[in-house]
Length: 406
Image 1 (cartoon, rainbow, N blue to C red):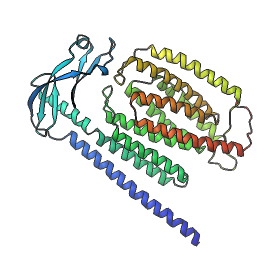
Image 2 (cartoon, rainbow, N blue to C red):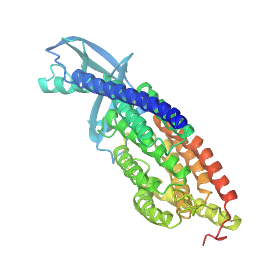
Image 3 (tube, rainbow, N blue to C red):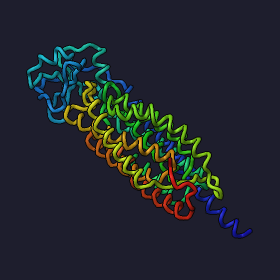
Image 4 (cartoon, one colour):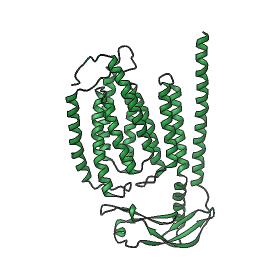
């Protein structure tokens, strides 16, 4: 009885500490949201003309063609910038490398820039809200990150008996790092969607992805329920950013169905001794050769087909970069399909596929400037090693009942 009382006491202290941390995170998130909203909707009073300034055009951000409808052109003068949206017809006739910017200043000291004199009240209001939204982006990112970090603490506390100390530390460490990166590297707006919304999608994707990965390493069939949420977020990001269409199609027509089917299949193969575990096994050599050949063919064919499509997005400003990423994305989607089949058949080789897929996606994230998603890839690499070791130990300690997968 005394021993049980000693064990209960530390658990209570940990739960109390977790509750305090959770409360502080929620308060911090709420305060950040309120502060950011107040900044965007703050009163700016009257805007008065200050001066005209010559700004230079940044052509490195432009890569538009006849299929483009609206072309954003950025002009800069030191730390100040002005973005003007031109219809393609006007953009095509645009030769000047400089522009005269009309600088206005509000009563609260905010600088506003226009390409013409005497802007209307509506133009001033829209410009002001856009400037304040960009300036308060780190605040909103912090609010979103703290909220998701609070959810992470809640999950690890509510299901403390399920996860080991290492797993809790790994999960919370990844989410804490994601919080820091989200504030340090805010996302720019793209395709008319504010960078705050894009960052929120990134953070949610990181949260649900690493939770799913952790459940897979624990041989839990419930990873597929979390994975459905992951797939929905992946599709949303592809639509918002207008990119990675190979991944979007693969997610829609392969990953969503395979998650449901895999959940049913895993439910039929529970471990005889530990019902919360699923029996897992490994692949044969000749089967690995067939899988690799299929990945190569898929990459070449799908990459060639998608690179030939004229899909417009202002997330990328370089056609060559977009084409390279298309082929890498095609390869990643092929490895992803192999990975999905490996998971369905409960094969240890799915962890090797995760390694390759994580490396390919990390390359895409670096080339695309999606630094917060690199935290997710760090989580992939570390958990993949952990999962591979766990599954290998399980396979060695359990004689495989079925020598062939097919």
